[in-house]
Length: 168
Image: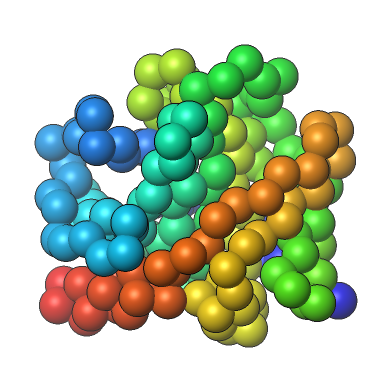
């Protein structure tokens, strides 16, 4: 079992603004897209992130903290939730047979209107490799029902984001 990194200082992350294809902020510039994922440059934080929406409006976003030392994965929905901004709760993430445990931080209000969700942080390179290599991620929040995130195309999207980041 792996532990996801959790530090208060790492909360200065690029997931502070949710970007969707419907509502792009001025600070975000599209870098490219690959296998259903969009890659954006966050011009304010000078970092790149990847994002994918599903057919029912759920959004997955991945990137690096401002200092690029820590990766984040955020999952957001426009469905009704009890998520509150800044709330922390235990979470387990299963990527095939690798289990990662840590803490998710809730987001509401400082992301695209109508969306809520949360993010986890990790400084474990194996976590990033597993996200890139696996096809599904099963998330077990402490208070809600488990859900599955489709990771198809993530490897190529992460490669594109790395290329994007290297050019900044």
